[in-house]
Length: 77
Image (cartoon, rainbow, N blue to C red; front, top):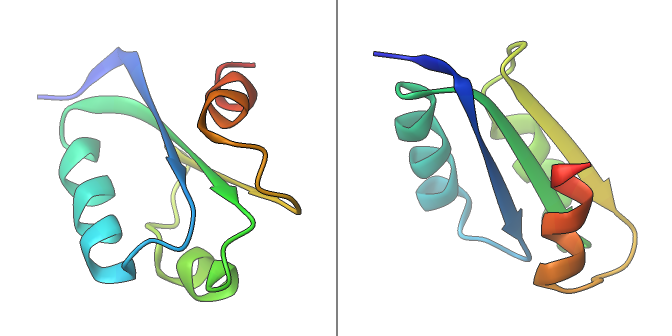
């Protein structure tokens, strides 16, 4: 059951893509919106190409690793 009033912010840096995509996909069954903040991963392009492409997912690629707190702040804005 999707709750459109709930959103999730993922902040990542060089994640293992298969595990990360699995986590995002499983969360999408419960929440209405997912924001992914990528903190300058080396595999940023591959990560973007593998995330679910739909209106419920936003991918924000940062050029610098600003840290987890700054990543969450970006996602909340």
